Length: 471
Ligand code: SAH
Ligand code: SF4
Ligand code: F3S
Image 1: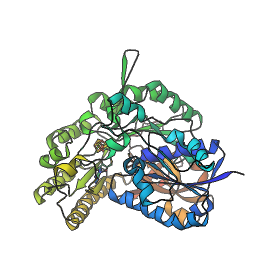
Image 2: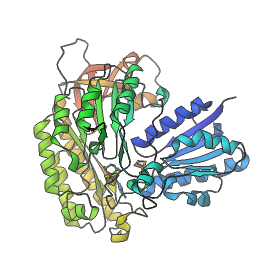
Image 3: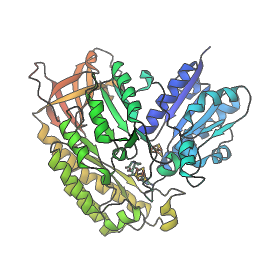
């Protein structure tokens, strides 16, 4: 009988991809995926450590399983990913009924480790070396990129896929845990990436999102030739069947002209750039060790606007970082006002044990102030998002249809005509009425209303021509 697997994933797109790949390998090993921990004999959590809140969520989910494990000691409970790498044995201490701890660099070992546990070998722990535990080569080797064959059933949709182009991060922003849990920055060979993308396109994939913590730092040298992200995009652009190419997340300092030229000149590349600023204050940026000034960030942004005028740019901000004063925060407001991001993700600073900022500065902005600044910045961003969505009313955009909207799913609407949701080339969400068979298609939609987060449209029935849509 098939073994029943339940997997829960938190964190970034890198984690979603990792879970997809773990599930693919376990399906091959005879597992079946179920939708509730109670139905499963193997329960896996793919975890995130970027903020305290993400970890708390997992520890409380583990807490809820204590009872299930007492009732059925054969249930296997595993913790994978970034928190596994960060907390390691500590997880066994906090939740002694956990059987398996696997870091992001050892995910390929999971089927074998589960077999061992089932055979009575006791609990298993596999993690990578600490970033100071050896030479760079040794540490790099201990973080293995995990990119085996894909499982279409675990993708966000069958016609969209993530493809990893690099792992790790070497930027060491002082607040950030990622470089220590994901290891050194390593780019994958371009030929492997292109082969994977080709396979996905053959399986019916229309949109590929390239993933890297600093995706635009991608650089791989083989046979004396160096491939940059712009070169890689040009190669991927040739693949028949693919309609859209996206890439996240960009590092402001590495936003080079060759990349912007690729975005401008290659019609399949989405005119959408996620380039987190983090703060508008030079004093804070320096404390964060981001490696640029706000003037340099603004210069980069004007280069984007000049070279790819119809692109949408999005950002991340941290509010309440150590020592952030009202004046510093006001500078973040200025930057948000001036930049007109399509949207911004705003986070309250969360102190991460083991990061540089813990050693250097006290976490001295009160929670209440962090919350207020978060709300304030978000409110300003939302006004801008709405103002910049409204001019799209009356215009026609091309939408890749992703599936029934959340509302349609909530109402269990199972007729052929439902509310559908999709995205424009520049990553705006569009909701419209359509037929289920249109899921996965590229459709022309006329926009009749908009708010800060969503465009509302209706499908254009008559095709108007082969123009290239940049919206
Ligand atoms: N590699 C990406 C994303 C890193 S994590 C990048 O360089 O932008 C995603 C976002 O989480 C970051 O952009 C940052 O805004 C936020 N973040 C990271 N560490 C954080 C911390 N300790 N507290 C609060 N937010 C944090
Ligand atoms: Fe973290 Fe900075 Fe690396 Fe992004 S660039 S993952 S914020 S250290
Ligand atoms: Fe979280 Fe790890 Fe991604 S810490 S944000 S899941 S790289």
